[in-house]
Length: 318
Image (cartoon, rainbow, N blue to C red; front, top):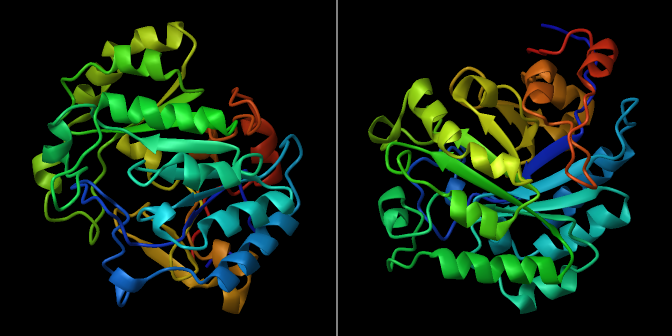
């Protein structure tokens, strides 16, 4: 077991719950492998304790701030999410929420004005392809282009910066979202290859998987978006795995570098550093996918060499 003390990266993703109002077939965060996963969520008290530890963690030289990203499930279904965002902001963290957008309203967002720095919208399609993808409610409701653009306006109204995440699968790889992305005008657009994670998306993944060349065709089809000022980051499977620092709804670090979730012991029991040392994290991959972008502006900043100096053994395994 490697006992080298790990340095946390600039962004930590906290999966505050496993509950979701959509049923995306590619979802790699169903947490079916956690006991009573349907009810799994971080309590507000535990979440705040973990946030405090993250906020007190020294920054590697060159990092301007640490960003905490609240994800799920659907994080807006966690009743304490606005409180957690406000608490993280009070402690000096850059705050972000990744959401499917269904529950967003001006009434929900407005109290977080000045506290929520980033909103990431998960958008794989802007038409009825969402029904095939599973980005729909049990009643068949999904968001179309007009609904997404409305939510983007609400996000802009509270002063938060917009990021869009798109998962490319066999269902949507032939689509062209260029016109929509230009209309939406996010600061960043992340394009992710659909990724199999054993124990999370086994039921449908074989019907959704695409090879790297197919993924690259989707990315190439949208190259005009970057020329028009939207920072585009493409993440194939091999880049995704092992390049995220993630905390599960039951308060453990986890990674999927092996193709399935591997969990640390609970952070509340062993502490942030010990728990992080028990999972795998590849700092070179993290930097390679532009994970070290400026958390205030979204602009890229190359910190890979300095990060490697500070963390000479970037992949930590327990």
